[in-house]
Length: 278
Image (cartoon, rainbow, N blue to C red):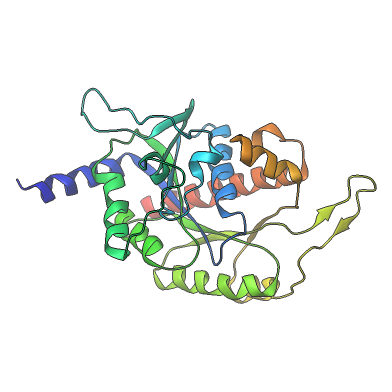
């Protein structure tokens, strides 16, 4: 058996350990996609699921920072000899290209084929644990990385798209929606981030970004709005500290909205899986 055949078998062996696969996308950068991906993963874990999070943003990986595993070494499975994703919490595991490069300042100046090969190597050269859910954090847009993720995973339970309210962001979201529809991947819903700012003194809500195109997009494509998240300084704080906002501020409106989104995702994914098995 050749090396390629061996690697293909390892990919299939790893994928067989993963019950459900969710891909988090955004049309443009700066909308909080990685924050949402991490907190969805921790939310799933809080619901008793065993979860992995895979960061395929090759040029701008942030999952290591968001999960507080910067500088933590990757260890090998003593049985297989293969490296394993890093254990973040009791039932959360993370794998990011940031753990494979020598410095936070080191850029990866790679063309498409190398990036696509790396994404496949995340499954061919690593030993994943049994997982209920894998959450994949894609880079913004609809380029090489998202396409390679869908091709490598083979079967995807659905995608969650993250956006901010302004119309220029919705223009890019439309491309992500079309991308998922062309690949016949279910869109579990859209999370609208930075919807408004809540005054800490009077509790008044003020919209920061003006836009009115998202409602029409949701209606035209029969997509659900999973959550509206406010601009909360504690989101930035927990992100910088590598702590899950959904856990540490679970009583706040945005954390409650995120957990409701998690419950919605579980209901959709597991109901669809049950129907497909009938």
